[in-house]
Image (tube, rainbow, N blue to C red):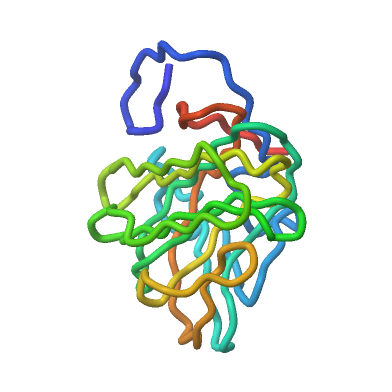
Length: 200
């Protein structure tokens, strides 16, 4: 039974494993921060409790986000719930270890539409999606085969259209704006399945 949308619904899906640890704790040291700060338990998440994280970009002229090393070869799908605070675009990215192969999609957090997708190197089987969960929350995802998925990156974008740098980041002058995050997931699949909590 899935309670992510606030009411129970029966799941008829293949079995999956969330390969991301600390999927709801972006403030944990397991998540690396790049010119950004994170504060857990900042706002109501899609599950109806105050356990979503505020990601703040700070004021540096650089890239702004969080990332995590994973390591999972083949076709993978990475997803996360995002909500606009006052920075209206979010990126989600899968890449290999040196950032030379990646696939990324940028999403408008008002409409849920993807404003740009970037494929670099030998990334194949690429796709993206977004689903509304109400109250401004979107679950965004990217799917790709980048040989060895070594990094999942979730970051912010200033305008939603940009020339990406290594690992698919946007780089811009921060102004202490941010987004909310909840429920990151990486699964060996060609599409996102229901969110699986991974607290360790």
